Image (tube, rainbow, N blue to C red; front, side, top):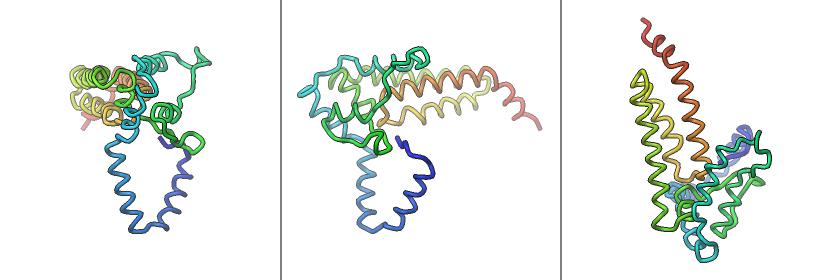
Length: 200
């Protein structure tokens, strides 16, 4: 997650582009492949849990659901999200955080392992996949237009389901927010959109 402004990012890219070398391109490609697999922090979690830190027995997943259903306006003492601190704690590694303008998570697959261990970790992953499937099916079959239903279901999946590096707190929060927003849009705006699209 990038926490610096768009202008700062552009300045960084412009400055970095002038310093590119063939070796840096090779190093960047290797880092990109590692990032694509996203197993580095998961691997360190397996080394650290339960050897140094016990399994959390659902604490991370329960915390992610609580976080979504406890609005800050009603719960002002709700803890701030700090994915980097969580990653550092469970992996035993130092990772960049808010001070460096980023947030690094283990990912919901690794967090499922931390919660339940190497066998039971697949239960929350399965339930999350089932939830994604239900959302997709709901929009495809319940929308007035199958085209809008496919587009809505696909949008939710593309911005949530494929991101293995995303923390379970952000997955649950993001999917819940997207689901509610698209349900409201479907209820109040889809008829108008379909009528406009059908106009000659």
